[in-house]
Image (tube, rainbow, N blue to C red; front, side, top):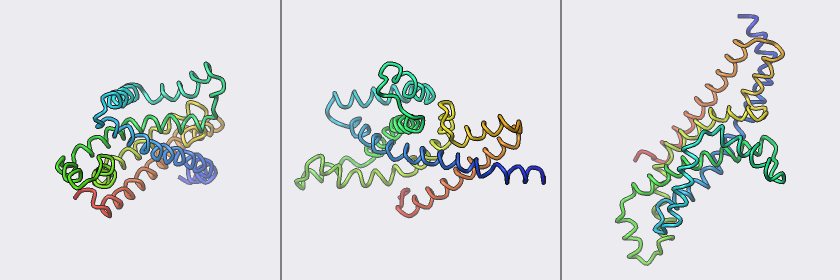
Length: 220
């Protein structure tokens, strides 16, 4: 036990630095994923058939292929064809996570929007609001409250899925752990510490999301 504590005291600071990178890319991914996802979700419920089909195609492609493949396409495949689009691992990771999260958030947004009583849109239109104004001022604010629980779950999932960025040499939590293993050969201790940090992050986020849900009345 003392040996494990001594090992943890030595290498935990390095793992926490990697955890900070994990948090950064997860936060960026969920922020931009939410923005893109909301736009795609609005496209899915749009009366414009072309916009609806483009949104549907995007969701189909992203949700139907592995995140790891998307990460490789963005970081390796695209730059091999267009050298000007070569990006550092951090940027590639943020783009891949954002685009991946957007497809799932788009379906969350679509479901939340469609769950709002259609009579509210009709009432807003009868009061002189345009479809866009009614959506922005009445439908989306209500839908957002219903989106919070699944959005929180998506963010927690993104923290765990971000471990895949270690495959493109980004020194996140898992990659940092792998580097420590390569110099110490202490598999059990390192993976235990990495797992505990992931568990701590997801537990804290679950608690924060739960508090936010209660504050805004997500379940009402």
